Length: 368
Image 1 (cartoon, rainbow, N blue to C red):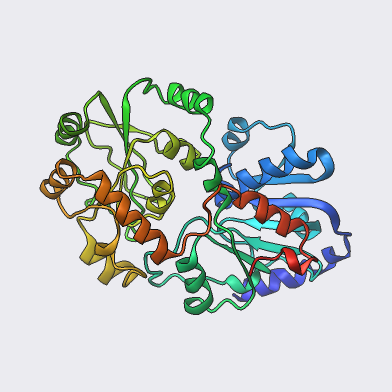
Image 2 (cartoon, rainbow, N blue to C red):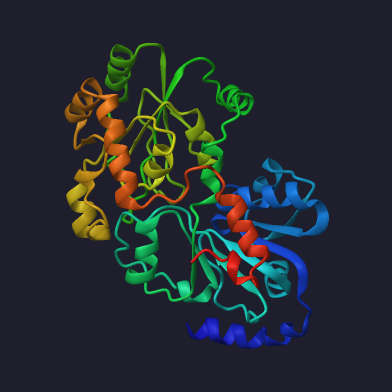
């Protein structure tokens, strides 16, 4: 904390640099990717406004730039001097995780946190410093209440839903086919297993028998199935089980969800994102007691009240798949949306968020 304050003091002279009114900086996964809410906001801004706004993204590895070689994006090295200068001189700063505390921001700048999911699991010992932001996005009412009442943020909260999920309402079959070809799954059905990371870094809980699962999928739902595993980017220990392909390096989770027919997760908020398409989702929570009592604390919503069939071991997972009832699932989804307070029903979150960002002086356009 002392070093951060000292660095901030040393950087104060940079506040003499003028703010560029058309500069928008995006921090995505600390420079580790081009995805999530920053990606979809930036694309919308470019499509709507062309070159009116200068769009800057940061990278921590050159491969991020090479994978996303967009001519309309200016790339700056994460944590370099260009990174600091861009943040100090940008009118708009958008991040899906955090922004550095050592930067001497100015009141005329607008700092937005889009976050990267819905509130569900506890925070454990993680401390969120949301007070650095002028506005935060909420995906649903449950998330809004967590930000306002648990993390005690008193600033503006946009109750719009996340821009990254708009694509799940407006799926292009051409785009879907292109992604599936890139993944080399072609005409196969896709089951994606996407658990969240463990603070302790272990992977013993990722114990699904994929070979047995594949047989049950083909027997219950028919067709040929491909099973894929996607580790969370922060997961330390990784040991890919047999019977599946690894999609952990695929950058855009929402694109994977578009092409996924069935999702299995544990405590990840991707369950909420995926549910917006009405497709089957299952919960595999073999370490639920340890996760609650040793890592994150109580969930913000009872896990056994989720609409997704819950399994604690492979035998229960097989039973959940065999007994899956789509009509019952759809009924439970409606209750789920009501309980969590769904905002986005028409895929227009990006438009609302960007309009609010770029027209922040108009109070009528801020959705509180």
